[in-house]
Image (cartoon, rainbow, N blue to C red; front, side, top):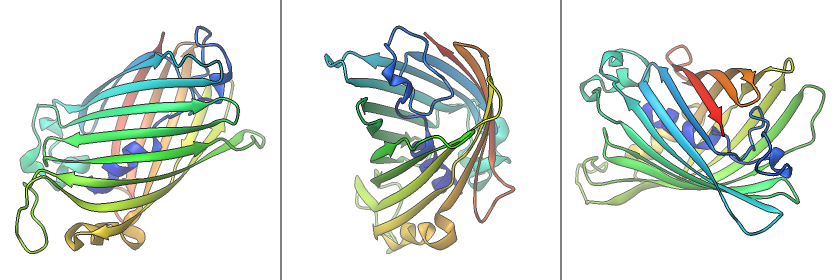
Length: 260
């Protein structure tokens, strides 16, 4: 489950902005999965404490927007070693930082489309993922709007994880993958919205020890989110991430976000 939920994380995070048509200094719609704005956030859940910091970039173009975002994940997670994805590797649960993440988003405001570059490194397994994805906003239908995302990337490790033949080869790529996400937003009231984001990830080629984890229903993950916009620049979000084959054994977290 740990691999699938890690992949889910980078495939379904907020990326770009249909709200990006507004000027940067204006308050952005934080319910928009495409919003680009400077922000800080923090969360607590079954895998510990997480922090994030996002900063908009000056593109020099009136029709383009850009943003970088850093995340520190799963700090002080030793107490959760028997819960969530940490239950898969309880001997590795600790109070240190489990993951670092870097994302860069570039948005073309003329067509509501953007490109995301994402790198995640996991210190517990000495491995990570690097990917590139594209998102496109579709027309809103009532209170529902969909944002399909396609992505491709690789998983790498430093040799601590062994290949199927038991050999370690130093820093290398374990496998390449492709994925499709349907990010769904349901605007329930002016200040409350929900998301359901299914993700299917398929290993394209690579070491059989890892590609077998991402075939058939093993490659299907789910993300559920319920959010409340407390003020125009502050919100709370309750997340649940899980896999198709271990639906009840997912990860919860409660998140606070502040826009600047």
